[in-house]
Every structure is written in C-alpha cells, then in structure tokens.
Image: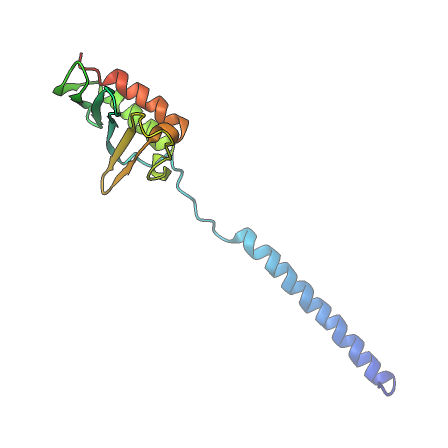
Length: 167
C-alpha cells in the first residue's frame, strides 16, 4: 500500500497534525461552557404572591351538614356566607390584620396551590365537600373535594375556618 519511506513520513506527519487539531478542538469545547453566561432563574419565593383572594366553601351532605363559605381577600377583608344548617346564616363581613390575610395566601402559594388537581376522588358520596376557589390577578383556579387532596389544604381550611367565624 505504501511505497517507500516518503509516504510513511507523510502519513505520520498527518496523524500528528490531526492529534494537535483534535486536542485544540477538545480544549475549546471544554472551555466554552465555563465562560458561557448562565441565566439566573427566578426563585419562586422571591416572586410576588399574585393570589388576590381565597374562597373556601364547605358543601352540605344528604343530612344536616353545615353549608357555608368564607372568603379572605389580600386586603384583610373576610366575608362569611352562612347558607344552611348553620347557626349564623346570612352574609357577614369583617376585617382582619392584612398581614394575617397575606400569611394565609402566602402559605397557599408556597405549597404550590396552582398545581392542585381540578378535583380529588371521594368514594363516599354523602360526606360534605371542601371547595377552594383561588383568585389570581389574571385568572381563577378552582378545585373540589379538597379533603382528599394534599394535606396542607385541610390545614389551611382549619385556619380559614377559625378566622372566618362570625365573631
């Protein structure tokens, strides 16, 4: 295939030259990512909570389960609406500390309430339901049967219930 030492040196020279080019290319490919600018990702906790209000509705059952709703707005306004089988029926409004209202809304945002499913399966049809409606600046998210969803929804519901009492 090769005739004489002249061709052999030519091939060896080309291999050495290719090794140098390959090494240079490898160095460049390894160095470029080090000097590339990285985009800073926004931390979700640093972003402003865009939840405007939360409405918690306890639905009735086939019996005499209380049917009422409590809405907490980001300005500290709490609206209680007693519908039936409740001692305080009617619509009542009160103000709470704005910080307390924002703590509840921030807790929902921190637990990523925007990723909750639309409904959670309840295998017992007679149990009262727990309905959430979250109002954002530009949209609304609702989900049903939250009792069977993530545990933080039940915890927040107890907090909202304690704040939303008529007195």
